[in-house]
Image 1 (cartoon, rainbow, N blue to C red):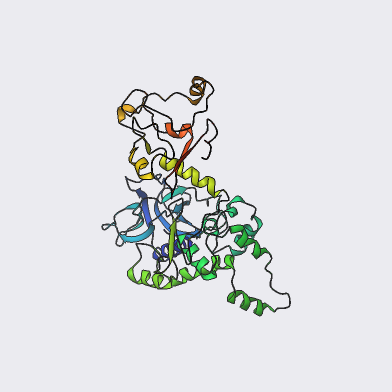
Image 2: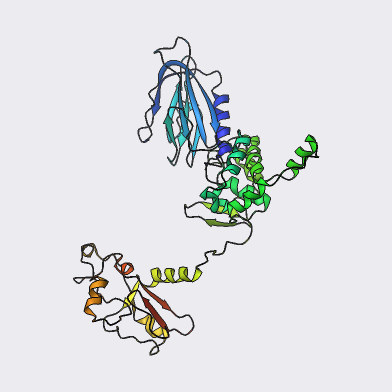
Length: 413
């Protein structure tokens, strides 16, 4: 996925490739793109680009005397997973060229194309940077550093540092491979609490006795995390080419691959987070840090065992010490709570409150009994969860015990 360095390299490419070229006519959008039409047309205009974090601004500036009279227009591009710009002959457009700007005659007709294979990229009219994004880690380092250290009370810093580094409100331009390389170089555990890592930087001040050259030397030899958020992306920009991405040439990608130390490298570990993004790191995987581990285990087992298994008809009288685990498991029948399409609108089972009234005050603990699927009154999706009955199987002795929200556990349970 293109990150801050790739956006800056793309803006550099546009400025170099379009230098001296005069574009003319309208802007052509691919019919399959869901992005907005670009209402711009001029007989002669220049194109220039600039980048900030993970955004690129493309400016269309009409030449003096161009017709029709048109004010300059700016577009903001977000590259998504695979966006890039290419300059190609107009008769050899690449696939997935979703926005095209054509040069004016005379001379061979060329097209500057925004190419996006996966179509996650998009553009916005108006030319204003997205207001929720923080200062750019590449071009606005001092503002970026101040913005982070001033807002350490934000709840995002309660998360692991590997997740906080992707929050563009504070780390505008940092993405997946950059966070892996930064944390690897500093040997920071990626699952350490972000506030714990960053609060130490507020106390870090160079000695006032050092000269300016000594301060610079210390800073270069021992950079902190925020300094690497600035210097590591600069290294990628200095590699040249297009940086990371499928559209890079083999030479460009070979240089980038040789630069990598952690991301996607052999011997490194990786985990996928809740958003489907992969974090690469060195060291062991994180352990569960929830102080209520026991309740979490119960909750997990409830979701796993209860919705997916129930006793077969005629086997409801199971008692704790009568059978071993193998016999008990043989009586469990996997079920699909959704059932056939025709069963999805069947009635819910009777409520717990109604069952309690019919029980004459006796405590009932155990699995709720329901008709088999396909019969009137079979439980729809989610019915078992609503009754909040927890079932757990013993690991060593095969005993089964139950806890129900309708009463206290049985003695010895």
